[in-house]
Length: 482
Image (cartoon, rainbow, N blue to C red; front, side, top):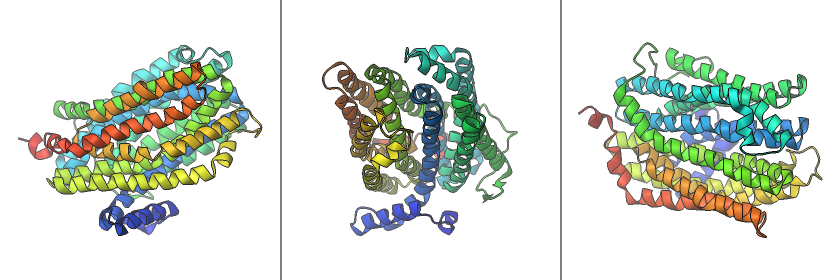
């Protein structure tokens, strides 16, 4: 990752200093800290850009349309999230196959994994686009009976659904490069796309006064631009401003390879299931939040957007674990693979603690950026929810880091189980008790903690057993070729 070192930035330096500090304490290896940082920080920047775009969407819509716009976009978000659950599942299989083949220097198999991944994600997401275009009002009505929220949410969902295949392809494209030890290229593409999205939204929402439809159009156009960039770069092997890339993909090769698709599905379905757990959990969770009333619902959606920003370190460390652990497994060095996994978990927790502390200090001004009236009734609750999130977020370092290592090996079922239990077994019941008893909003605070604590405990337990190393042997190129 020499390119990342030629272009240092404060986020990379902060993460590196934390890693080197842990190395001085003997908690991680200094060289592994540097390599993890070089892979993680571009992905964290990408996540910040993407989640900032999402947060800006809500802020712009809130200013232009009001609380109904915020809740409408928020209630449409779980449907848009299906793209990331499905695309992320296939991408989970992609990074496992690519990183292990890269570590084993089995370069001939890379193109097939890439083409089959792209084919699979398009086949799975196109029906969703059609469904959201035809039945957007019915889908939003499943969550809320507020006519203003339904109107705004349906208008947003109908248009934003067009971008779902592009969003899925972008996840696959990003994982391909991270699996090749290159997090810089996806950062450039997706970060630039996020900036373009914010500019497009400003023009469409305020300049053309398109409201929530403008926000949806901005999302579609920016995702299409990113997907086109990935496609050109992978086929040409280079891209202006990025340079020469580590691989070139022949687009004329086979897209439907039974063995590759089977491996992608076998690895990716549990990853997809884990993503679907949160996405599907959002429906009852938002329905529960709706019981509290529009002000609390608006507060919760704002807090979730801020939570998304705080959660971006997990994007970087999870993918760094998947890539680095996968490469070591591919080369047959299981001991180093385990060391990478364990140290990345420690590294991630430390970074989460620092980022959570920063947001805790600036919770009030960050929250106020989402509303045009500081006296809005939703503001105090939103700030309190952000405080709760700051305490709960550190556990994401454990769950995300362990999940990344498990996914690199192909051992993805436990990460699905942990997320399902955390959300449906704990967080949602606690939130419902809060909405229907005197526990009140405290139930939402406790739900934040439950959704991180349970996956952290289960994922780390599974990682500690070491069984994932044996599972990885069934997906390594030398085994697959026998």
